[in-house]
Picture 1: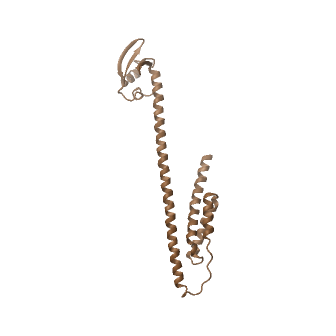
Picture 2: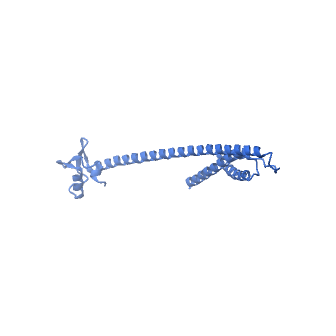
Picture 3: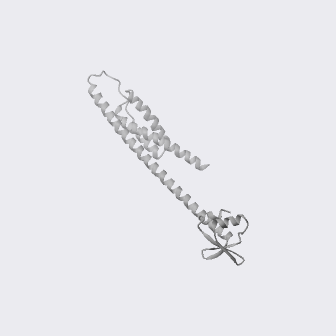
Length: 208
């Protein structure tokens, strides 16, 4: 049995005690707890509670139900608050990732424009060079987007192809005009691969 004083919301409550017509008290909840512990009164003794006489056993059972309901309500409130905090954190992270992708694309566009101007400036003085490979920026970006929403393996393909093409652009072997779309497709492929892996692991954990 739980502590009588705790069940009575502290030691401020007082109760009249009755046994076989003999009435005593009023006693503080802590006094009744001490009398119960000393076997001076038993669970069949009656106390005056909310305008009626009830046995201590029935009172304890009723109060335990009330306290359990309070505890469950408190746990549920904490759970909802925790879920709301986690949801807000996920939203902030998604906004940060989206902003980072936009900023990286802007930087890539500026870099591509600078490289194009430099190429046009030095074209008349440059020695003949081998033809550059055509870029696959549109294909890589398409693979990344389809993979993100439809088929996870395409994200991995966009990641790998994008990384390889960017290396070739840096080495001067591929047309750099597609750097922006290639970089965006690679980044989307990286993000999609990570999300698909997380989702797969979460599905496996639920199925066990």
